[in-house]
Image (tube, rainbow, N blue to C red; front, side):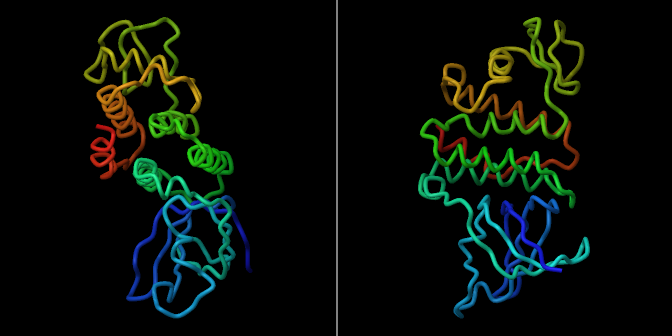
Length: 239
């Protein structure tokens, strides 16, 4: 049976001299891997390697193979053109960082339209925005809601944040409690939108401390989560 589905490219690896295996988060079937033969050869093909860059949003036509087996992509059509993401060095590396995060988190072969639409709409906003320095930070915070690990808001202005339990507290009651400026900032940006006025995270150290906090939170709450290798490059770019 042949099907078509919107897909977000998570990444690809080379397979043999001319082929690739591409991993996609599909809207209908969750995460699936596809073998595309001959894509890296000099022969003309209706599929182009550029269509399978990380985070590209495409519509794919494929056969519905059993779970665990590689499917074959018969045709692919780009749905969104990411011009600024691919041409702006900071945007490009933010996208690389996000794709690494998603590769580490999204593994299930089940449909999840809500998280798919969230990622798609977020990337489109990112492509069109000129104020994006905190996009990756807010993206990771919003994503916790879809993963079922959204931190509680700081209703009572408590000075500590318990990373393990995901809540703010009045006392330092565990080794995973943190306080200080980063927790003040974290409390302020919870619940904000991508286009909020950038009056909280305004310098390099604040962003680094915030992303370190959020990645530690992911390590505790998401089984198998790995720190993206691209975080070092991203920190250097923002410095």
